[in-house]
Image 1 (cartoon, one colour):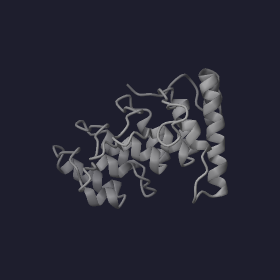
Image 2 (cartoon, helix red, strand yellow):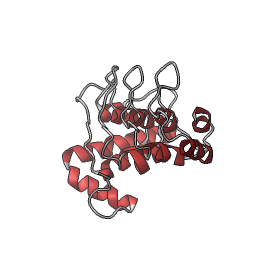
Image 3 (spheres, helix red, strand yellow):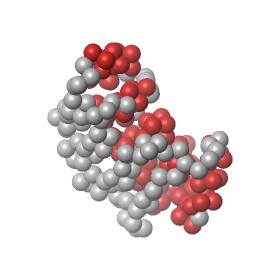
Image 4 (cartoon, helix red, strand yellow):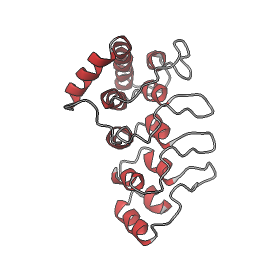
Length: 197
């Protein structure tokens, strides 16, 4: 199953799950204790179907942690896996979106710091709780401060996204309802929330 996830082979993974429905879906797959869902939530342009197959497994622990306490959602926010975050994880009420690993970094801080604008917009639109972090803690939790920080290796497009994220989160902090409604309109989302319970 690990090879199917790593190769982005959704058809093979579905076949293997059918053949062995009782397999331990939460078992660590490497020396870091990362589950198949952890690995599937990393940036995987080959197939966005794989995380959804794993999330549908009846025994899945959507908040499983690797040896540092990082969850699949944390990976997806850090790595910019928009389809995993926006289309799947935020819609699943089981996912603890503000879960922090031992390092103390928040998933939102990583998404903001790396300029993952689509993830931040999806999060706002979802209606899920957002931990904006402690103001001034720009190195771990302050998502607005993290987005404003310049860093080496960022291109102009990424810096523009980071600036837009900082502005968007500042608007959200001052008027969450208005900002959420504006973002939902931009994304073509109707109704209140799209979280599945």
